[in-house]
Image (cartoon, rainbow, N blue to C red; front, side, top):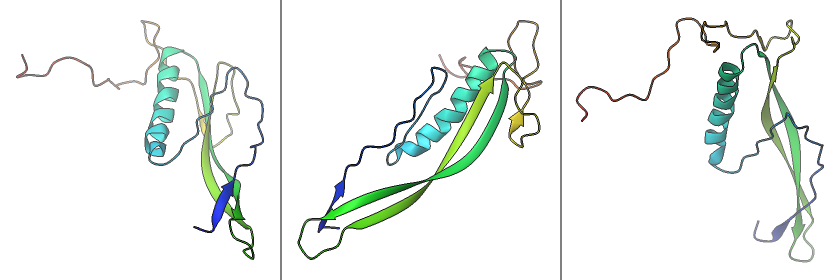
Length: 130
């Protein structure tokens, strides 16, 4: 690839609504962002009672164009297949027939939603610490 330089093309921008979050990744950050995405959705579900969730997995093709730096070398196009996940949270009932549908978490007396029998890891000090 010494003989080529990548052509920066403007990406088609679709408008992002006020209740939408887009996360993009580069390099090793992908692992952290994937974990954070699921974590954020779970935190929101527990903080706002009554949220329905639909999770779907899809993919998109991204084509990169490379221009030659030398004469007599042809331009290159490289297409990457990128996986994506969409998590939709709504107070209104979503498509319950969807394979990725999750009903709202059950309500607790203190007004906070959480699954039955699940407890957090906590932030307290363990035994043997001063």
